[in-house]
Image (cartoon, rainbow, N blue to C red; front, top):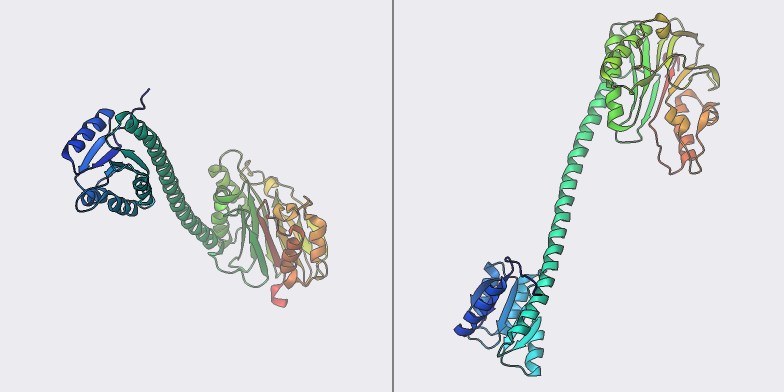
Length: 398
C-alpha cells in the first residue's frame, strides 16, 4: 500500500528542461507533495534560502550553476537541518554517482526516469523526514519547557527571597533585643517553620519565644506569621506572658485550618527580680543552665500547642515562675535539634546537647552546639527545621 505523503512536505524540482519540470510537478502533486520549481542551480540555491524546502530533486548538467555546486551550497545553507538531495541525471556512469555523493547528494536516479523507483525512494525519504520533524519538534518542546521551567524557577527564587526577607524583617522589626540573646535558625527547606523572636518591653523585661509550626517550608512559615504579629504588639504593651499566649492562640485558632498548629515555648525574664516566667506548649524541655553550662532545671511542656483549642481557662495559660542566679542562661530549642540524624539514623538527642553545653562558657555555647551537631550529622541534611535560642539571664554582668 502506498504511504500517503503529508501536504506540508515541499519538494524542489531543479531541471533546465521545462518538460521534465512539468512532468515531475504533475507526478509529485498527484502523490500529495507541494512542489516548487527551479531552472538551474543558482535558482535552486535562492529557493532554498527563501522557501521552506524539505527535499530536492536535482539535475546535474545545467547553465549558470550545475547540480553539484548547487548541492554543496544547499548543504551549507541547511546547517543542522537535513534537506535530502536526489540527483536525476542521464550521466549514469560510476564516476558521476561518486561525484554526486561527494557533493553531498543523498541518492542518485538515472534518466529516463523510472517513476516506480522514484516513488519508492520518495516514500523512504519521506519517512526519514517525518522522523526528523518529530525529533525537531520534540527537541523544541524540551527547550521550550526548559525555558519555561527556568523562568518559573527564577520567579520562584525571587518570590522566595522576598518572602524570606519579609519573614526576617518581621522577626527583627523591633530591633535587637540587646546583649545576652543568642539565636540560630537553620531551615530544612527554603523557609523555616520555626520562628525565633526576642525583644524587650518598655519596662526592660526580656520577652522571647521559639515557635515550631507543623510542616515545613512556606506553608509552615505562613502558619507561624500570626505568632510574630501578635508577639510584637503584646510586648510593646508590657502585657503578662499568660495574656500574650492567650492572644496568640486566639489569632491562630481563627486563621489556621484544621490540623495546623504551632508549638510555642515563651519566656519573660525579669533581670531586676532575678525571676522568669515560662510557658511551654508542645515544645521540648526548656533548660535552665548554671554558669558552668550544667542543666540545673528542665521545664517540660504542660500545655497544648497553640491553634488547637480555646485557652480561656486560666489553667491553660498558667506560667511557671523560675528563680535564677547570676550567670544563668535559658535555652529554648526545637525538636529538629534533638531529632537530627547521622548516616546510620542515630538522633542527636539530649545527651549530646547536655555534653556540648557542659563546661562551655555561655558566650560560646551556641557555636559549640553547632559544631557538635555538624560532627554528628556529617554531610547528611536535616529533615526538620532546627532553631535554638540562648538567653543570658543577666547579660549586663556577662
